[in-house]
Length: 198
Image 1 (cartoon, rainbow, N blue to C red):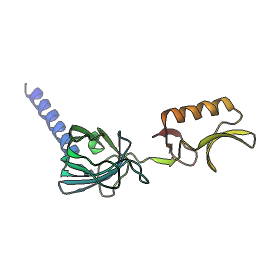
Image 2: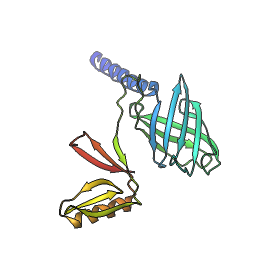
Image 3: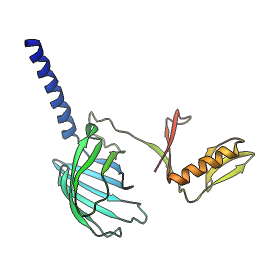
Image 4: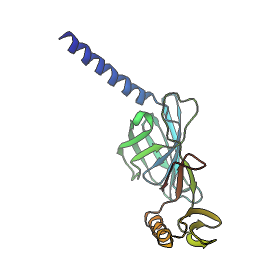
């Protein structure tokens, strides 16, 4: 009986400490959201601020948020074309690297945020740091250069398919279909893994 009680106590203590780490995580940094927006968060004490936008050059929307940690108010700002406002409540997940909306009003589009930029001075938080090259899916094309088939964006050679024209055209169609805008790498030069993302 004593061993079982000690085990239960230890498990409860471990769960409480994991929950404490997530709730205590500094949320400052760059985040991407499933609404195709990029968000720049700053946490000062228990107050969270952000600026979010979809496309820096000509955003369809841009907004700001202020709240006590993950519960607060958002409002669209005039850089974008939208003019809404509302309440937003979120839940912290994955050791402070994921936020999920639990309640939102005013037509807010996003539901899930993932941290993509690290803020120095945030100890103990595992952060995904992506190494990506952005491209415009509307300007890419398949070209034969020096006898090799490539997908290019202007003068930038993105992918090389050697003599395989069919594979180059299939990859081109996939990029267009899914609207990928970034080519990402794990380890450079000579990356061990490559992937595409929006």
